[in-house]
Image 1 (cartoon, rainbow, N blue to C red):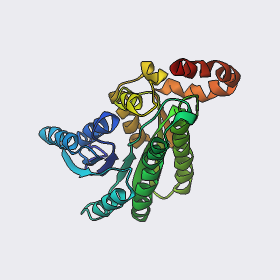
Image 2 (image 1 turned 45 degrees about the vertical axis):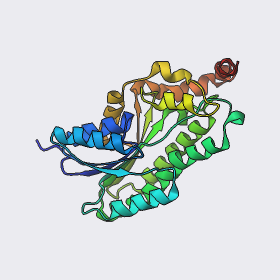
Image 3 (image 1 turned 45 degrees about the horizontal axis):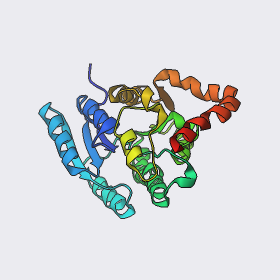
Image 4 (image 1 turned 180 degrees about the vertical axis):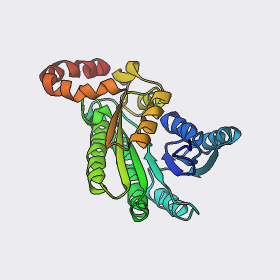
Length: 266
């Protein structure tokens, strides 16, 4: 049986490590051409060689998605490619843990540019072509935090809540067009995400790190959405009950949750 993804072109942001790199490996193994986007050229080149060594196809696009001019240049290059992008995976993003009142303005703005603005720009650039071809899929890598905002992750949770709302609205707009918009609501994943959060000014360790799943499981969530073309999916699936628990026990979370953040501050 022919692999349904065979011959597709997939653009993956944040592809130099973690979830993005694993998704690139898994999709290249299924016969797609993966367009790898990230800042770190050395890591992208290493991943490209790894993919090609196993018979896959990959192209590297070095881009700092935080910079509007760099995003515009990336989009120009992508739109000039001989084959259009069939699948866009908006994976790039980062988080910060601590009191919002202590969050440096520069960190806040960087988070907005990468977690939100980059998604908007790439979607605006590629969605019209997908609709015209009546074929395409955009997957936004979200988080359970989008539906479960908590102390210490105000900006991160807000950015993921935006992705939830944005993805749902576009999914409904594109219904019947041949284009699908999905959001993968991930639990914590074992990546550089947590170390990066610790290194940022005034940042700290995210308590949820201890419950992290592997990047391989996260990638399986992406593959499942590509197969089922659903509006959303949770990974791991059990985390799908968390928004309901928050609704039922929100008062308890209001009282106990902030203690974790206070411990970090002390």
